[in-house]
Length: 390
Ligand SMILES: C[S@@+](CC[C@H](N)C(=O)[O-])C[C@H]1O[C@@H](n2cnc3c(N)ncnc32)[C@H](O)[C@@H]1O
Image 1 (cartoon, helix red, strand yellow):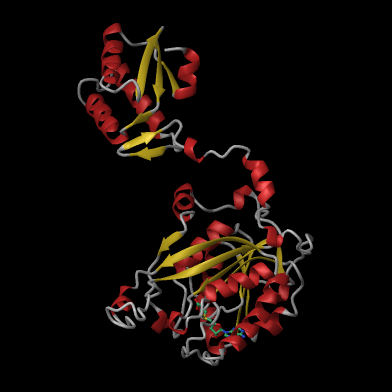
Image 2 (cartoon, rainbow, N blue to C red):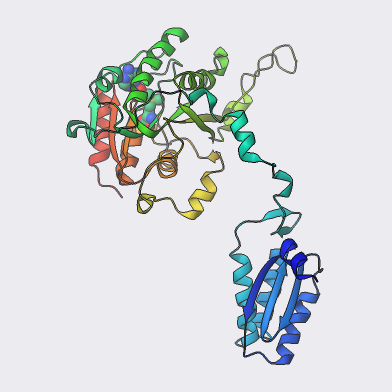
């Protein structure tokens, strides 16, 4: 093989093992001869094994090495080398999948765009938010609001708080579905509902730090044909926030699938059913958030799983116990906070209800501020904070 061709077309892995006999080297070399040279190629020279790796059925390869190292080659230098080879290949985390094989080279080629940066500039990323006028100076949240649950209308409470002092807002506004909230009407005319909601969101945007995030959980009322998730997103875009993405919260709430079909078995007016809700994620001023690396508490496994924007999480089961009809499950809050904020950040929920956001924020070493109009829910939120955290 021409060396330059090899470098371009294969991933090269090198292993040095001075203790192997010629017989053992031959055994190892014959193992790789079973594979097509197009997939993997093994060269042995001066006690050095070089593996040219393009693609491999990792499951089969792993079984084969494990069988060899547990039987014939157990406790030998050759067994040790094979184990080293297996571990090294397993540690390669970037690969494509083709059939049963992991493809280590060229799997991204078809996605490569020539002059990507220039084209990005031409298109102008988040063009709708480039002319924002947000100040980059962040402020401290006054002590009287730090780690507090405040009972009141969010708009008037937030009006007393300085600009740019909150790291992340996670919230679920009242749905306007006619739910029996403790002290609040939940069936306004839609226009009046959005006017009130956006007046509170105006304050939320103002108190958010430069680089802060606002994540809004929305369940549209499909039966009224009101796409709240689009209207709310459109509002934030109009206010020059950057749309960072959308997460589908799949509740697997299959009960609703079998009722209210609209015009049954006719194209006349079929009614679409949804088992999920939406999380719309926005950033103020910049997509990058300031934070110390040691304050990132998300694990590699969590990160890998959660950046896939469909989250399968069952709805909260303890709503009766807490006396609130529309609570977040704790897992949903934990994912949002660990993926989008750092430890010690300040988390705000302006519709804090039974206080799931503030409870999880405290549990995850974040600071918090929770606001709700209902005294009863604020009391539940405080009781949860005061209860021992398991
Ligand atoms: C969907 S619930 C939020 C539930 C919360 N995520 C939880 O896990 O418990 C919406 C909440 O908004 C509150 N609310 C409605 N209007 C409000 C207002 N103007 N200011 C503050 N809270 C309000 C309601 O009392 C209700 O608890």
